[in-house]
Image 1 (cartoon, rainbow, N blue to C red):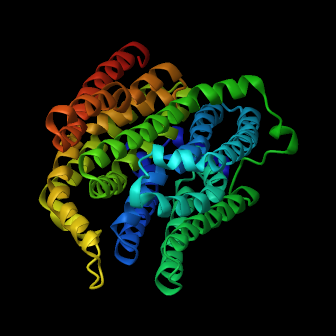
Image 2 (cartoon, helix red, strand yellow):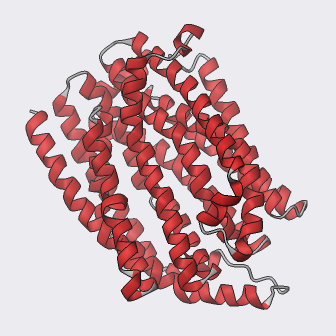
Length: 458
């Protein structure tokens, strides 16, 4: 039964197949993003805007460690998709076993280092002044759950590589809903403050891990690795590493970007400026969920058909994915251009007992967030090409172009822009760096993707 499901990646018409793969992925990302969004609203309303900034400071560290799991997952899942397409089930099993071992070893080591250097890492990522103490509380508790999150992110990509998008969707929904329920209980009812927000997040990771474990132990999965599959295999590790490094590099650059932005904005406008970026950062995760969903749905289709040497289907999947993603990105763009002030207001507390500092911070956010949001999302309609193009090279196992195109936006363009433009334009220099980097990276990706298609998919 499961084998038939994976074979459908090479048989169904591309349009309906992409929708079948992308819709569950989009729903899962939507729920996960809504969780992050509503979690931020809860924290902002029940704890305060400084708490939002504190969580934003912690995210780069915890996300980077969790991204190790995603990197191992996506790198290995590219191998699994192509192995299933080429009818090599033993290679798929050995790859999955190596993914499990590698994720546990690396993430546990990183958590130990993260806890040891806690007092140095938090200020380095912008956790200064009033932000430091709540950030440290959140950081230490959440970090204990990050290995489980990494295993979940790794497992989720493997589920999708098997052609089981609905199960992958459920795996994303469970922790999201769980986190919101636990937020209500721990923050609102128990009044645990930042401790409650942190334990709610960690608890949600454990819920997700429980479901992922159930999936692979049940009959729903065709991948049943034995103990002998868990032994590390150098050629497989090398391939996982080269492809997974693309995802890891992307997250590493994202973490560096958070570090730079939090510090630049803190120097320009203090805690309130960091809070503005925290809100926009949540919207970047939330608003683009359908575009990311199409990208996630595209990956196993491209990988499976490339492994099966069905190049016309690979070519069709690229064009269809770019078209669908561009349409939904344009819809997102229109909404954010029309309602930025209303969106920013959702994150802010209106409690009667707010201090003068909290009121001042809220006023600053309301004054600056709408214009900043419009600038940040100004190039949204064209980003589909950049995302799908970079994902394509990763799906077919070409690590070097995938890495370079993944780093193009943030590494080659965005980071230099935010280091230069704020010196002349202040905060405006930060915000206009986003659309400039989006435009330049899309042009570069479009050129290399077209060249690859014309040369290889004939």
